[in-house]
Length: 186
Image 1 (cartoon, rainbow, N blue to C red):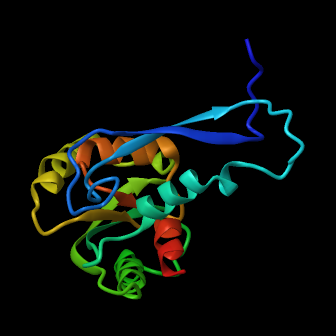
Image 2: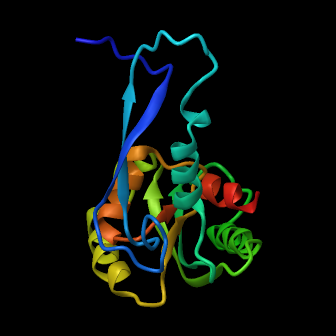
């Protein structure tokens, strides 16, 4: 059996899980796909070759992060962390929400369709479901049924892979964090 390393990778295939829409190779933003990455030891002389240099991977990443020609209509969720009441806060959840909406509006043709401030505990920010079970259940019943929303923006600096997969699976929409929104600017 071959040894597998994370030094080099090649995109082997892209699986489409739903019908294509809007003429995109990978479908609309609501169509999710996965890629299979094989990490293997390669004896080639080109040591700088890696997944970033693979044209298929570049196309995949560009297509995944490219917003549709008419932009996105976002549901912005701000997880308001419950801090210790003895410590003074320098800002309010409302101001942080306004800053998040302003960040979205810096992107051409991106709009904020709806916004919601949700109280969360500091310890749950990195869990697969950062919201309480009742709040998450409510969101899972409402978000997929809203026709005016094409994606969800969670106003946290960076979501981990488990969180992104969990939210996208339940909401059936692309999920962005602050990092991915800032990447869209460039």
